[in-house]
Length: 162
Image (cartoon, rainbow, N blue to C red; front, side, top):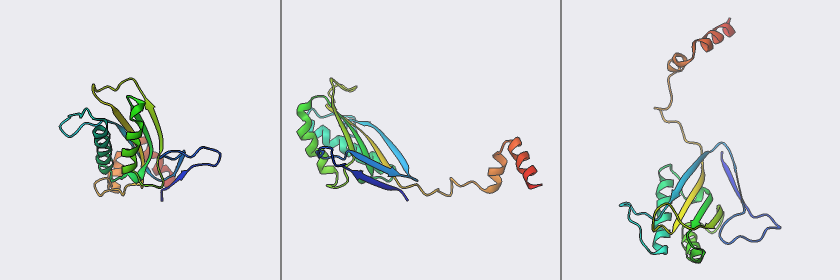
C-alpha cells in the first residue's frame, strides 16, 4: 500500500500553502504532468491572470483525472509566473483547489516569459497514485510469456529443471 506523508519539520518556517517535505513509500505510480498553461479546450488564452490561473488548475484536474488521480494525490508543484505581482492571486486560486491539509511541496518562480505569447502562468505537477490493477488485456497467458523468452533463457530454464 502506498503511503504519503506531508511534513513541515521543526526549525523550518511555516510555509504559506504548501509542505516543505513530501515522502512517498512504494509500491506506487508516479505521474508527471507537463507544464499546463491557462489554455481552454479551443486553445484560447485569456489576458486576465486569475482566469488563466483557474484554467491552468482545471487543466491539471483534467490531466489528473486521465490517470484516476485528484489534487489530493499531488506531491509536488512547480509554478512559473511572469511577474511576482501575481503571487497573491495565484495563492488564492491554488488554495481553492487544494485541501487545507497535506499540501504538496511547491516551488514558485518569477520568470521573464513563457513559450506561449500571452501566457502568464504555467504549472507542472507530480502525483503519487496507488499501483494500478493489471487489466485482463495486460495479462499475458503463460504460453505467451514462454514464447517470448529468448532461446538462451529457455535453455537455461530447461537445464535448471533437470
